[in-house]
Image (tube, rainbow, N blue to C red; front, side, top):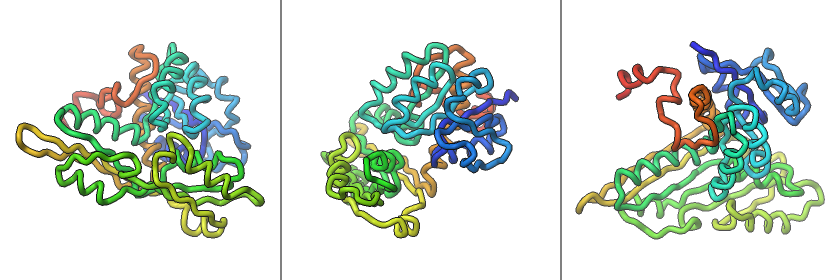
Length: 324
């Protein structure tokens, strides 16, 4: 079995989840972790793992088969993904849905001789796959995506990038009446704020302007502006006591008709650890990126472009025998 050599760029919550997933993959080896923090401050799951400044990544171009990009979508990945894709096969979990086309174009331009799988978290990710599958099976229908209840890493990270914010967490909460309207076979006309609300808990730096921070959050395009958003300011003690877990989940539903009959399709997730699950998805797609690069399938790819059997450590014949 060929061992896939993995690098991780960014060792926050997703990076830690990815490291855990790689450690359980029999066909992978975690070669190095790259960080903008002081390497000696990083505690890894295994003391034998090299932790290096992120500037050292380029020097390991020939020692890493796939680089997992675990930075945030708001500011890290738009800058880092094209840079790394010019040298490495990459996988990221970029989740700003509205900007994916332009993000993909930038990564594709850089990935001339590499395979770069973008937006491989769980939404975008498996949720995207389900939306495509459901729509294909029931053309006469409407698709609805609900997130939560749980912590959105991308939205929490976006809040933390605001000046004056020390720590923050954002919970996405689906509106139950909207979910039930779809499950019953209806096709309600739901805007973003009709489906979910966003609850933010924020710890600020001493002297920071609460009103300015709250306004910045609620008016942030693509993240909060289209939703009913509440902002609660709390102290560090309450944050550590009540807001350090990372659960999440959600569902994709399609309500439609085949002939005169109502049909409802549903796919759901219930996650105790959002970052560990995201890291597991990225690790599976690292396997796909490695296989595709060996076939010369270069450029930016999405989960809609990757055959399912590329994700597995098992060969295609075995999967067909065991799962089909």
